[in-house]
Amino acid sequence: MTKFKRVDPEISRRKFINIALGTTAAVGGVSLITALGSVRPVNRITPGKLPAIPGDILVYADGDKAGQPIQDADLGIKATRAWPQGKDKDGKPLVKSEEPNNLLLVFKFAESDLKAPTDLKGVVDGVVAYSAICQHLGCQVGDNNEVPGTLLCPCHSGAYDPKQGCKVIGGPPPRPLPQLPIKQEGGQYIAAGPLEFAYFGTTDTDFEKLVKEAEGT
Image 1 (cartoon, one colour):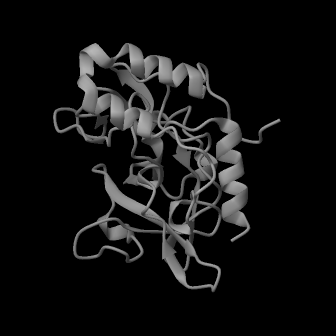
Image 2 (cartoon, helix red, strand yellow; image 1 turned 90 degrees about the horizontal axis):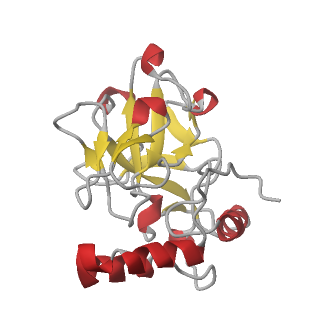
Image 3 (cartoon, rainbow, N blue to C red; image 1 turned 45 degrees about the horizontal axis):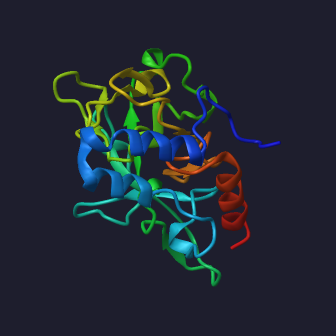
């Protein structure tokens, strides 16, 4: 029995591939290849591809501060892109940027604005983190400039509300973006656990195996 939160509907590999195949006519061959490429076996995984686990530091994904721990002063209702930074087998810092599904979006809202199904135990003073990968076909989501404080996928207009557990508020995504529980230590934001459920294109079982592998490195 998996320890990760299950969502309804849950997409298995077979269901996901069927969805991708059925969408070919609408999105074209490039999107299909991108989607199917996300359904990968658990093996042949390098340390930089392993998912976030407790203790990983959230670092800037891009810009002049890329690789540095994210700072509270830079956070707001616009998303800050981040990677989890863990350690390799030698104990050296390792940014887990080789797996696109590890990309995170970090926000800071007024605590009173955060509503269910947000996991408030995984929020620090209004700071909340989610996967940046759309649950429809695996595109990167970003700020919706027309509706500040929400997210929009540029591929097929999937929309999410990060103030309400990144639930789907528009478009075709079948489930919300998974939340990464965080805590703050020494002025740094740190993962307090793995993503609440499997990221895009991965079954719960395979994701749990990846997390266990990451915890063993």
